[in-house]
Image (cartoon, rainbow, N blue to C red; front, side):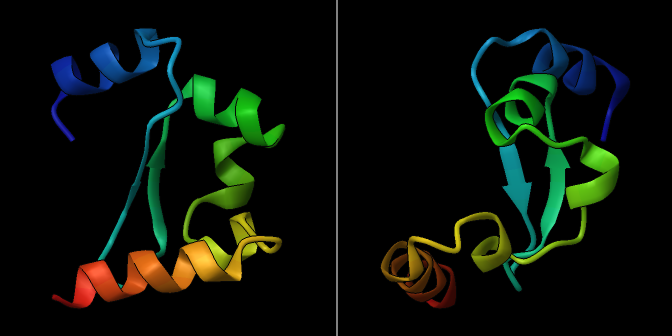
Length: 68
């Protein structure tokens, strides 16, 4: 990710998470770390269902949207 883009994401108070097409977490900004109460080092590479275990329906909807 470009340095300027990373700086912008890091300065936001809104959580920003990006995922690859397999729904693995690729990036998370500091606000996202605060939201999930975990460091980026521990969650990067995890599947979306591991981050939202109580929301399997939401994960299915997102997976279907990615597949389209």
